Image (tube, rainbow, N blue to C red):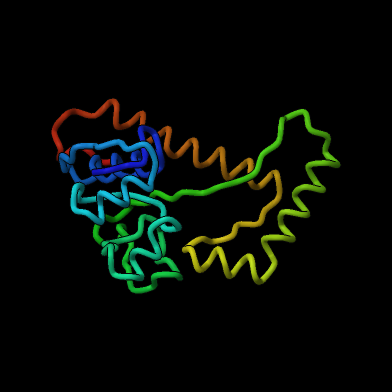
Length: 175
């Protein structure tokens, strides 16, 4: 199981998959996604929990075979690819990006930045480019984004804590 490095989304997504299935896959950390894709295409590694944006053109060109997406719902960019959750109920691991500012940034500046960023994300050309790469735009308020981050942190923290306290019996490895 290749990843773009220790602690990356792909590494954690793979560890979640291993924990939920009881499979024993050897983690092979790389120094970034590009060398992983090279070795995946070349057959040096067998599985990669990687971001869709970097791999989608290889999938479309037939150089990689997507087995499933790790999100809760199918990707609009690859609608024929099932979710891992179809085969492994409850599995979900997504990668997201956001923009932050230092906590003492004045409210007026935060509001201005948020408005401009959300306006850009509403632009049909930008939305189309994100969609083409398998991304979904998530325009939101600073408060909602903060809550989203807190919820994500709590969810992964619960999984991590429960994983650490479980026995080594693979049948009990469920987050």
